[in-house]
Length: 200
Image 1 (cartoon, rainbow, N blue to C red):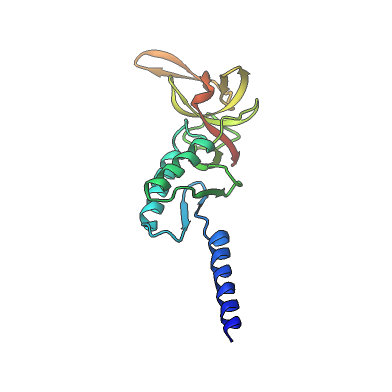
Image 2 (image 1 turned 90 degrees about the horizontal axis):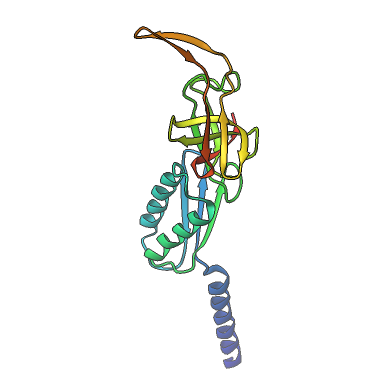
């Protein structure tokens, strides 16, 4: 009888040990669909999971509009938030509507400069990346024009030339002067690119 009790205790200890080893890993699972963020933290640690999830959601929403944050710095910063809440080595898993380790953003087109490809008021899905190629449609921050959505025309090192798809030229009288109205043609730095349009 004593052998059975000792054997049962050994089995229980092994089960508990294996459970800690295989189930005890802290993880943060994040999902982004371009507009919304969901976060689920799995841990046996006694922490404020709701508070941590809320902080990660707020941070992620800010990242979707920040041109300087890439996937590596995003995960590092989420890891820092986890450590603030007592999770030292949490595994950060990012999934999205466009795949793992991608940050999608939904953008609204404002204006007619990308006709006929994009319509005024249309929504497009943006992959937050600086990996651009000639022919891509990108969203960028221009010193001259502000936030723009344009096509990549040329790449020269870190300098990206962007143009409008709408090639129509019109003329407008404003305060007695005749102005030529045409699409934008401008250079931006690669760091000014918010991302590449992947669906419209």
